[in-house]
Image (spheres, rainbow, N blue to C red):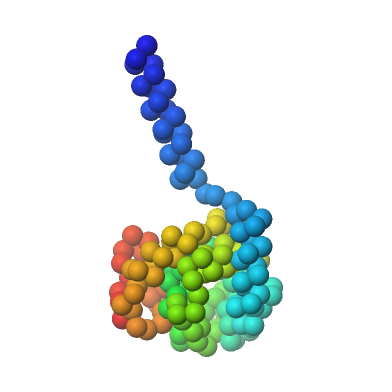
Length: 162
C-alpha cells in the first residue's frame, strides 16, 4: 500500500510540474491592463494596430522579437534599441529609447503580455519576475541593443553588458 501511495504522490507531483511548464494563456484582466499601458506608452510609435510606421518604427505584429524569448523582449524594452533594423526584409532606422527608468516591472510585463496576445501574436503571458530578472541581468549595460545582438540572442547565455 505504501508503494502505491508513494507512486500516486510522485505522479501527482509530476503532473503538477507539467502544468507549470505548459504555456499559460493571458487572462482578460492581464490583457486589458496591458492594452491600457500600451495605448499610453507605446502606441505613438508602434500604432494602435501594432503595425508600426514604415521605415521608422517596426511592427510588433507577428514579430519574432515579440514572440521569441521573453527575456530578449524585456531586455529590448528596458534598454531600447538603436540603428538599422530589418523586419520582413523591410528597413527601419530609428531609436527606441530605454524604458527602464520610466516603467515598473509590472507595467512592462503587462505591455508584453498584451502585445504577445494581440496583433496576430499568440504567445503566452509574461510575469513581472521575468522582467525583474532581465533588469537585474543587464543592470550594467549602458547602451541600447542592436539588431545583430538581438538576432544572436541565446536564451541561456548571458548577453554582453556594454
